[in-house]
Image (cartoon, rainbow, N blue to C red; front, side, top):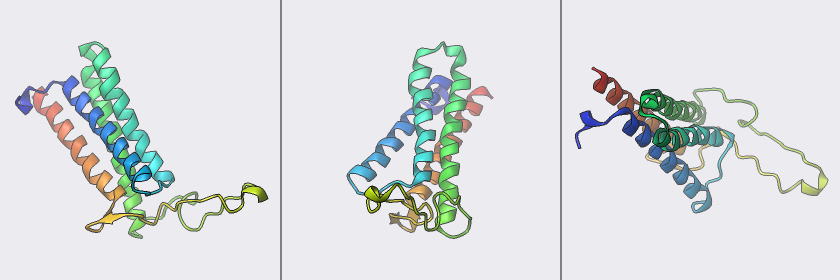
Length: 159
């Protein structure tokens, strides 16, 4: 199958599949690798979940005339997750100031009975790196690449 032959529905479904794979990968790192997610990690997952729902479920069910709009929405959700990942990577490198809710030394108090059980994962400290990039950095690179390739395919097909 040639790339030029991919229609908007296929692009939407590929973006959705990418989003689902990214969420499953994040859950694997969390539950199998012990890498606890911070608040911004959860924000990034929402973009991938939205792309998965839009791309896989909605594009497979709705009429073909809605496919271009759905493909753009799925790609936008992927790009939004990548933008949050880029922002978090910038925080981890000390280039950007993060939100007070998840950067620095946050303390959560939920009563004396639960005093030692609350664990807040800071967003500005990378828990895992490979070749100098954190998971947020890899999310940004991969998500921007997928969104860019998908947008190129949609525009190329239209031209």
